[in-house]
Image (cartoon, rainbow, N blue to C red; front, side, top):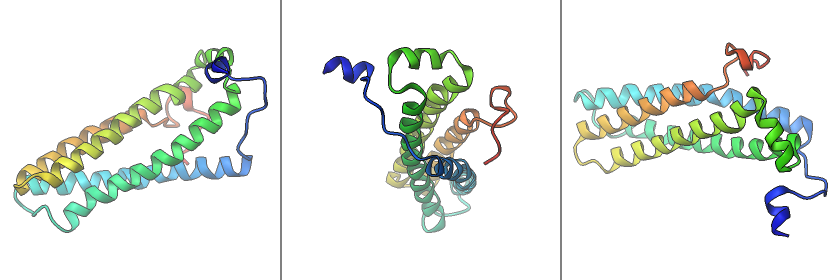
Length: 173
């Protein structure tokens, strides 16, 4: 039994229907643009708040919360896709997983994308939490601005863009 947990079994694995997989991939790819817009809005409002031009209430505070909720939705969809597609290509066998990791396209999604996005999501959560707890509006704005900007940079570097050579086969959605 423990051997099966680590290396998989010979039993067939559960696969996601192709129509559902394509729909979820389309949603996951399209939702990134909403997240990027929310992050930009959160960064701009955080910067304005840090300069004393806006209070950290209302719209400014909601931008952080909506961004956090949007990335949480993206995380859930991404994890479902991750485990179902990982199962599809490897049947959860360690030998097949090792073979797949030698392919840059697979490794980029299975490791680089996953780690980068998890770090960005953690930064967004920390940034919003620290901003919400700050007692001075300018400090709250600086926290939101700094953490969201760092998350945006990591996200932009972690997205498998179609102009990257190993992802040339991917579309914009």
